[in-house]
Every structure is written in C-alpha cells, then in structure tokens.
Image (cartoon, rainbow, N blue to C red; front, side, top):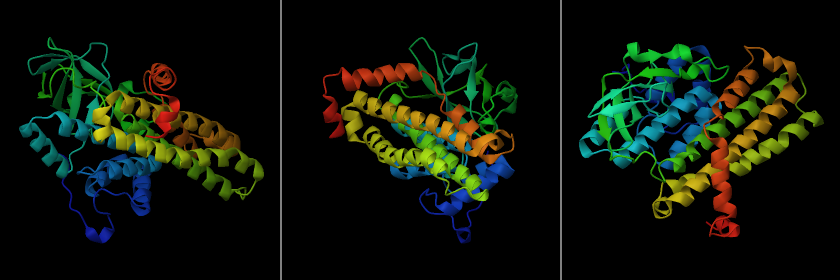
Length: 354
C-alpha cells in the first residue's frame, strides 16, 4: 500500500489533475532534493486520479519540464489507466481505478529481459528490463507470451526482492529507477483478450504521450539554458538568440500537432481509422525527437563547458532528455510514417486537413 496522504486545499493544489506553474516548480524542487518526495507530491496533488486526455497531456508536458524521470513515471501511469479503462473486465477496472483514486502509481513494463516473460494460466515466469519506477510503482501492467498469444497482466510491483535497479547504469534518467523486474512465479490478473496490447490506436497510437513529455523536457532544457545565460549577463547576446530562438519557435509550433494527435488517438477518429491515428502519433514523436536533438546541440554551444559538470542543472536535463528520447525502433517508425504519408492511398495534403 502506498504511503497515505491528505490533501491540503490551502497549499494551492489545482483541481482535476492540473499542473500550474506553482505546482510545476514544487515538483522540480522536490525532484532535486529527494525524488521520493516528488513522487509523493504526484500522489498528494491528485495527479494519479482520473483526468481527460487534454488535462493529462498538459500535465505530462509540465511534469516533463520539471523533471523527465518524473514525467516518465507519470506517462506510464496515464498509459496504464488508458489500458485498464479500455480492456479490463468490470471487476478489475473498478479495483484498479479505485486504487488510482487513492494515489496508487501504476506502470506499463513491456521490455523483456534475457528470459522473456511468459504465462502459464495466471502464473508468470521470466523477467522484464527497463522497468521504470522500481520502488515507486505499486501495480504494473506487464506483457507476457502465452499459448493463446501475447497477454497483458496486472501484477503487484511492490516486492523489493523482485527489483534489480543495479542494471540501470545510464548517464541519464537515473532518478527513474528503471531496472530489472523478476516475474518468476508471480501471479497476474489477465487484462483483456490475447494480443490486445498491440491493437491500434492504443499502442503506437499512444506515442503522442511520449512526444508530450519530450516537448516538456525540451522546454525545461531551454528554460534552464536561459537561466544560465541570464546569470552570466548574456541573455541578449545575438549569437545565443540566433541558436536558441529557432528551437523555441519549433517547440511552440509542435505543441498543437501533439495535441491533435492525442485528440485523434483518444477519440472516435482513432477508433474509425486506427492506423492513421498511429501514423500521426508516431510523426509527432519523431518530430519531438528531432527538435530535442537540435535543442541539445544548440544549448551545448551556448552554455558551453559548464553544463558538463555532473551537478549542473542544464547538463542534467540534457542528459535526461538524450536518454529519454532513445526509445526503441526509431528507424522502423520513421519508415512506417514515410510509407503512410508519401506512399499511401491518402494524399499528403489531405493529412493537413484532418
């Protein structure tokens, strides 16, 4: 059971899962001091409860701006909630949503370890890797091979004996507590029918969420770089503005495209045309990655050597962003988008109209 907490309306926590500038600043400060405190603040602020897709999108962006490891955990929770609302039977759905209302953090762990996770009945074996939020996530959705096909299971993620955070030795996203999770002998609650995990628009169609968190990270990087330049009295230097202003403009232009992808994936349009929804979500994810790569390069040139200090807040955000953007199968997704937009039956211009 996660740590109990009481909401305090006098602290200015926004309603309905919103993240205003004040809460965002508190999340950033908490993540710098003690990541456990930052996760507790997510619970306390009501961010793990129900939210419509627009509120969740803005929250993912704002939380990513505050801290990308925290954004990663929150995006996983939003994904888990969506899968549960879409596929769970009434009993499991009611149970999980009630736990989220109480502040339980959920995750989705899909990457297999050396021994892939498999299921015999409702009993699992094997292991997951890159399982984010070890020690923070209370319940996780894990994918598993089975005789019927790929299955999803909801499992208890709190047993520390199953955690192996030591395998996460990345230079970025260190606070995400990603690592191995041993599923040997673990009981699971089936979620949905076989092979629902990769069903669109709920699989690749959900990558707009990653784009939202990524864009938040880019904003956070640019804000931190601006603070560093301001501290030096260099905020008006034309060389820095020429490097950073185009990135900022692309960020502003990308956000409506991400929101449109989310609107399609989460609505009737996505159900009617699931592959088109997946294409649009993948395209904004690729767009956010391209902007992020250019942002890191531009910030390195402007801020310079100081950001390579391990304790530098600009450098830490750049390392986290570089690590977060390295999602799997990037080139395959780029080819998929290219075929749909350039070689498909729908003219490219028609994509702009809807």
